[in-house]
Length: 231
Image 1 (cartoon, rainbow, N blue to C red):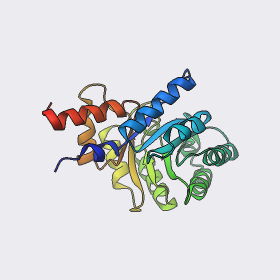
Image 2 (cartoon, rainbow, N blue to C red):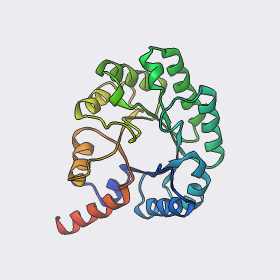
Image 3 (cartoon, helix red, strand yellow):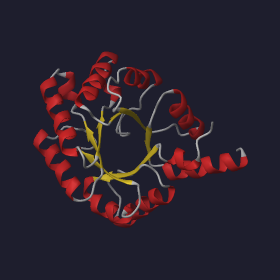
Image 4 (cartoon, rainbow, N blue to C red):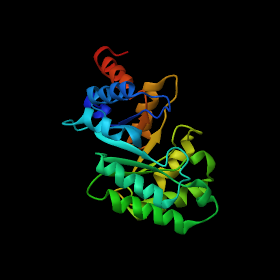
């Protein structure tokens, strides 16, 4: 049974992380997310109060990106950025993992940051951890997914979109190593061609719950046209 337009829209987080973005562009981005009624609208943390203002009264989550895009700020800085974002109206938080620390097998740091993310978001916002799977082995992806599930993170996310994109095999590894039914799967980025069918395949066949892309509003319109006209 085909997804309704409203159901399809809620499979998308609409993100804009350009360094050059002006307030006018951020407001237009947030309004587009509101009009399309996607799941969340993400920007860099500076713009959180602007997005919260535009989305006030809607059910689109106010998303903020933490330690974006490299994840290499200190743990204290990450926690401070989360806390400030929540104070400014964020209701969804994407934190970037310190990939280097994971590759160094500094699991104590990774677990500390995971616990801090979950603790700070509990009852206030949706928590998501960004991996950047292009830098990880299959074994690292699998073990990290289990760590996130054990910590109670709401979503595990494949990438920031500023580095490499995940393969189908990597997405399946994440999906197959989620041990906590609370933890869902988010994929960042979509192909530039045949985008609509690719998103439906990811949702229906790969078990992807959320897709992060700047093109979310455009895709929702395309899907509505597809349902109405068959093209």
